[in-house]
Image 1: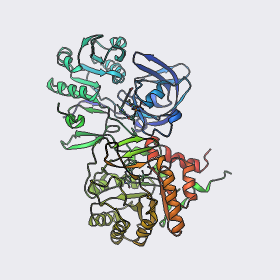
Image 2: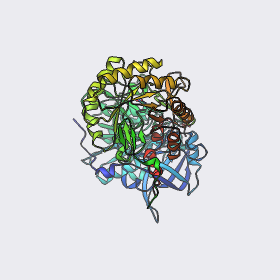
Image 3: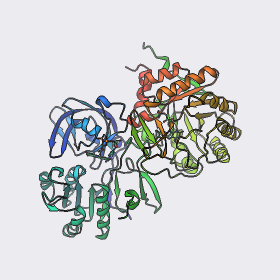
Amino acid sequence: MSIPTTTTTTTAARTPLHVTAEVLSVKKVGAYHHLTLVAPGIPERFRPGMFVAVSVGGEVAQSRLARRSFWIHRVKPVGGYGATIELVVEAVGVGTRWLTGLAPGARVEMTGPLGRPFALPQEPVACLLVGEGYAAAPLFPLAERLRERGCAVTLVVAGADEAHLLSALEARRSARAVTVVTADGSVGSRGRVADVLDEVLTRSGAEVVYAAAPLGTLHAVAVAAEAHGAWSQTAVEQPLTCGTGLCQGCAVPVVGEDGVARLVRACVDGPVFRGDRVRWVELIGEEP
Amino acid sequence: MTVTDPGAAAVELAGLTLANPVLVASGCGGTGRELAAYGPLADLGGFVTRSISLNARPGGPLPRIVETPSGLLHAVGMQNPGLDHFLATELPWLAQQGTRVVVSIVGGSLGEYAELARRLGRSPGVSAIEVNLSSPDAPGTGVFDVREPFHAASVVAAVHRDLPRGIPVLAKIRTDVVRVVESARGVLDAGADAVVVGNALPAAMPDGRPAGLSGPAVRPLALRCVTEVREQLPEAQLVGAGGIACADDVRSFLAAGAVAVQIGTALLHDPTAAARAVADLRGAP
Ligand SMILES: Cc1cc2nc3c(=O)[nH]c(=O)nc-3n(C[C@H](O)[C@H](O)[C@H](O)COP(=O)(O)OP(=O)(O)OC[C@H]3O[C@@H](n4cnc5c(N)ncnc54)[C@H](O)[C@@H]3O)c2cc1C
Ligand SMILES: Cc1cc2nc3c(=O)[nH]c(=O)nc-3n(C[C@H](O)[C@H](O)[C@H](O)COP(=O)(O)O)c2cc1C
C-alpha cells in the first residue's frame, strides 16, 4: 500500500544548485530572524519540505566546515530581483548568529533546494498540518499548495511561548482552522502538541497529517495519525554535515517499502519520511 | 590562445591516464550520483568509492560526524551496501560517467581483501583498486586493523596476488610522519603501483570513540608526509590527500611530488570544490 501522491518533476528541476546568495533583508520577528535572500535558481526548484544548506562565512569561514541547514519558509517574487527565498532562523550558535547578524547585500554560499519534499495527495482530502517552533516554516507554503488542490487544511502551530510561535496570524489566512499551543500558555492552549492531537484529528477528519517539529513531537504525530487511520508525513531534523548525501553522517533508521529495516540518509532520502516508516524509538534513543 | 596551467593537464598514474590530477576521496562523494547533481564526474580526474566490504556494513552509532575547528571528526564506520549490491547498483552507473573509477576496499581478513580484489578485478568499469589500510576508526569495527607497516604490506600482497594484471593497486596509508616512509616502502615492495598519502588522522570524538580527523587542519601534516616519502622514495608514485580544498592546495601537493591529489572533506562543505579546483587549475575564464 502506498499513499496516493504526486511527486513528478523533470530531472533538471530536481537538481539542487550551489549558489552565492545575496541577503535582501533581515527582520526580527519574536525569537526568530526572517532572512530574505536572492538565491538564483533555488525558488524555481522549491517544493514545500525542502531546505538549504548554508556555509558559515565571516571570520570563522573555512574553520566551521559543517553546513547549517534551514527550511525554506517561502519563495516569493520581489520586484527587480526575480524570486527570493525566506528563511526563519533561531540564533543558537556560531553559524546562526553570523547569519542573523548579516546586513543587506551580504553574500551567503548555499546549496539547495535539498531533500525530498512533502508528498501531496492526489485527491482533495482533509489535511492536518502540525508545526512547532521555527520548524513550522515549511508548512505555510505547503498549506497554500494543499488549498490550491482543494484540500481542507487544519493547522496546529506550537512553540515554547509567544515569541517562538511562527506567524500564527498568517496561519489563519491559509488554513480553515488553527489551533495554537504554547508550553507556557502565553497564547492558545497550554501544553504540548501531543495533548491536542486526538481532538484535532477527530475534528478535522484529516486523512493526511504533515508535521515539522522536534523528534518527540513527530513521533507523537506518527502514532496518533496511525491510530486515526491517517497517513503521516514527518519532516525529520537530524544534525547534517553536508546536507547533500555525500557523507553518510545523518543516518535515520527506517523500515523500507519491502519491510526490511535499514539506515537511510536524512538529507537525501528525507528529510520528509512517512511517519509509519521511521523507527522512532531507535532514532530518538529513548522509550516512547 | 589561452595559457594552460600544467596543473590541469592529464597525468599518468599507475599506468592509467587521468584527465587531470584531481580525484574525489573515498567516502566523500556518496555513490557518485549525489555529486553528479552539481556537475559531470567526467570533469574530474577520477572518483574513488567509499570503502566497500564483502558484506554490507551498517555503520556506526550517532553522532557519526562532528565539527572541530578547521576539521571534521568522523566515525561513519564504513557504512556500505556490500560488494554484491555495489556491483549490481552502483558500479554500472559509475562506469558510464566518463571518469576513472577507483574502488576502495576494506576487509576483516586477508582472505576477504583477496576475494574483493578477485571479484572487482573481473568487473567491467573498474580502473583501479584502492586498498584502505588506514581506517582511523577501525578499532572495534571488525576491519583488519593495520597497526604496523608489515600488516599493510601483507594486505597489499594478498590483493596484488589475486588481481588480474592491468588493474593497478593504490595503497592508502596514514599520514603518520614518523612511519610514513616505512609504510610506503612496505606497500610498494608488496606490489602496490602507487601510494595514497593519505587517510584521515587517528583522533577521538568528544565522547572518546575512535574517529578520523580530516580537513584543512591536517593539510600541513599530509604535505609533510608527501614531501618525506618523495625524498626517501623518489621513484614512488604518490597521491596526496588531506585538507585539500582549492587549486592552490593542489599546486602545493603537486610541487611536493604528488602525481595526483584527492579531495574529501572540502566536498562536504562545498559540493563543487573539486570541479572548481580543476577549473581554477586550468585558468578557466
Ligand atoms: C533539515 C533541517 C532544517 C532546519 N531548519 C531550520 C530552520 O528553518 N531554522 C532554524 O533556526 N534552524 C533550523 N535547523 C537547525 C539548524 O540547522 C541548527 O540550529 C544550526 O545548524 C546550528 O548551527 P550553529 O552554528 O548556530 O550552532 P552550533 O551549536 O555552533 O553548531 C554546532 C554544530 O552542531 C550542528 N547542529 C546543532 N544543532 C543542530 C540541529 N538541531 N540540526 C542540525 N544541526 C545541528 C551544527 O550544524 C554544527 O555542526 C534545521 C536543521 C535541519 C537538519
Ligand atoms: C565522512 C568521511 C568518510 C570517509 N570514508 C572513508 C572510507 O570509507 N574509506 C577511506 O579510505 N577513507 C575515507 N575517508 C577519508 C578520506 O578519503 C580522506 O582520505 C581524508 O578525509 C583526508 O582528506 P580530506 O581532508 O580531503 O578529507 C573518509 C573521510 C570522511 C570525512
